[in-house]
Amino acid sequence: MQLHDTPEIQNLNPDPLLSMKAAAAYLDISVSKMYELAKREKFPVVKVTSDRKIRKSVLDSYIKQSEQPWCWAKYATTN
Image (cartoon, rainbow, N blue to C red; front, top):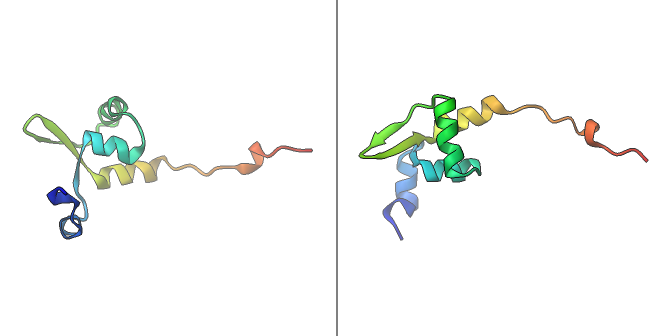
């Protein structure tokens, strides 16, 4: 078990910095797509040594901003 896997550590920071790999997993996209998205959307990133980190709140804001209403009626089949 790693230190950040313990509930006590996870609860200390409500807005953690995620690696690009973790951010990609959070959005369910590939790591290369995550880098493209971060560059295109100009997400603020934190450089820790050579690694880039992104705050979870940045991803949550992006998700909220990208949400669009879904119209099920367009996809309903008629018999």
